[in-house]
Amino acid sequence: MMNNSSARLIKTVKLMGAPLILAILLTGCGTKEEAAGLHQTGTVAFMLNCDESAATYFKKALDANPEFGPSYIMLGDCYLREGKNQEAVDIILKGFEMNLDEGQERLAHRKLARAYKELAQPEKALEHITIYTRMSVYQEKFSPQKLNDTERFVAELPLPEGHEVVSVSKIMEDTIKARESSKTAKENESSLLDMFDIM
Image (cartoon, rainbow, N blue to C red; front, side, top):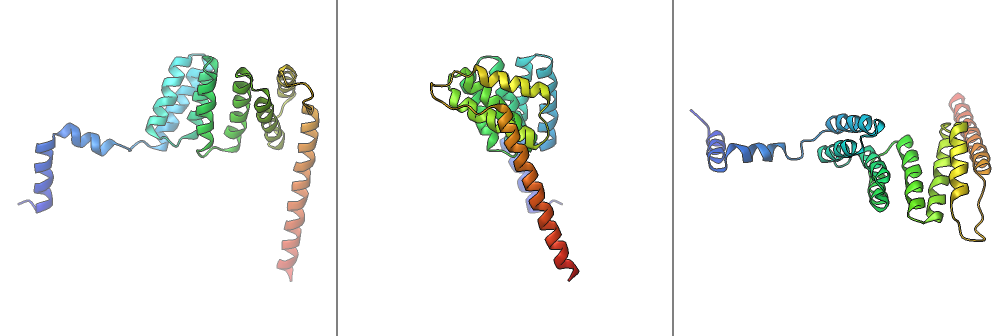
């Protein structure tokens, strides 16, 4: 003997059809793990220069989980390779609205700098390459090769006459000072808190 709930469910399935019920149940069921797997596959395709396949996997990752920020950033990189610079900017900026870790955010700024350079917006390109440089130095991810690439990028920017450009080395130097100052402040704060714990 069935209760009323079971009888109603069976009647609904008969009326609506099993495929529709299944679609309703599966809507919005994409998981972060599913998105991460699709993203990882897209990243491999991207590294193999299979941009169309990579873009497809990044889009599928976003279908599975529209809040999976890294796929927005990498889809933007695919658009950059295809010369779709405005689309790249739009999708990367959407990625900034999602939860990105520091490394993903750093790389997103580099990609935005490239896109703005291609869109003939050198001031915006300079802004984002500066943020990328500061984040790279602060996170200790700035190798000599990245320094050379960034210096070349800045030198190639067609900035308006009279626009002051701070050298990449100066940005690095200032960021290192700020990082050290921040470490010292944290150490002093920790020492002060330890002193109060003793009392």
